Amino acid sequence: MNNPYYFDNNATTAVDPTVLQAMLPYFSEHYGNASSAVHPYGWSASKACERAREKVADLLGAESSEIIFTAGSTEGIHLGLTGLYQRFEKERKTIISYETEHKAVLGTLDYLATLGAHIKLLKVDRFGLPDLQTLKDHLDTSVLCVVAALANNETGVVFPLKEIAAMAHEQGAFVFSDLTQAPGKMMLDINELGIDLACISAHKMYGPKGTGALFLRRKNPRVQLLPAMQGGGQEKGLRPGTLNVPGIVGLGAAAALAKENTWNWGAHVSRIRTWFEQQLTEDGRAYINGSTRSRLPNTSNILFEDFRAAELLKKFSFMAIATGSACSSALAEPSHVLSAMGLNKEQASASLRFSFGKDNTFEQVQDAANKAKDILQQLKENQ
Ligand SMILES: *Cc1c(COP(=O)(O)O)cnc(C)c1O
Image (cartoon, rainbow, N blue to C red):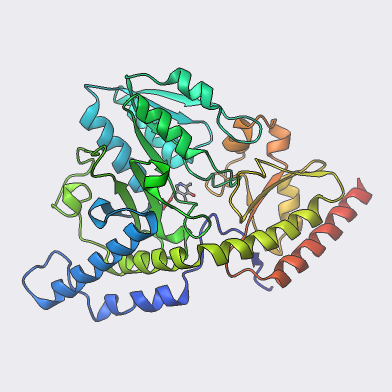
């Protein structure tokens, strides 16, 4: 069987060939430990990591001293939120977030609740967007942090982070944003957005799996954390353990590539997505989930009114796609994101996510859309 077209780029991406080339020498040639400060093997590893740190900072509009390397966004979220809570729990105990956050955030917040944190999960409207007045009503000086992803991995809906951050700061609360889905899809500037903590992950932006970064603002306000992991002194003691040098080099190369190509890639995926959505929704029985005004250019979450996603998924085996979220696709439960947007169980389980990437071609999408339309037509005739 031919490999299906890969339209699951929000779950993970292929490593870009230039990223892979940049990484290779750091496996078997420059294999030093970046903490070995007394010989050239260590120096070249450490230099490579510092260059990568600058590239990551540059992608976010941050300073390199504000970047901590992690093993990806799940770890960045855990280290950032747990470390922040443990540092400030005597002063502020409330954390506000949204029902549509990634499980990595929701799971960490559940854990912090067991440590005594007061977690408030706010609702979104049927477009997947937050109500700012509701946020304002919940904000006071007991709030330690507002946690909100910039872009949702299931629907691509983009939150008004700048407005959220301004409101949070009025009450002296920090703002943590999961930026995992944003690089290479939208321009990023953490100062413009007003974010104090943020995470990214290399494998969502054409880099390797198991590497990412946590941004911690150094001034106005200075973000202080207690270490949520104990061990060596690496990464300011906040993320101890020998640095994954090849992975970090890959993260840096991917960050530079994403920054350079955000505009091109965005225009490309937006063009193929627009076409794809037009084809699949033209009969009036399929609807786009989530705001089409405030959305990533590559993501398309479609509700197929008359069908079940599980059935469609089988018929659509020429495409690698997702039902709800990739992480929960093994579970029978409908997507928590779509449910939070007010879709009933049936609607949520009749929805599919298509997420396009820089390597998808117009021909692939055209062929896939034609096949999908034929299948939908046949299914309808058999109903
Ligand atoms: C993939 C993803 C994560 C988890 O990132 P990992 O690096 O795989 O741990 C967190 N948040 C969002 C929005 C994601 O898309």
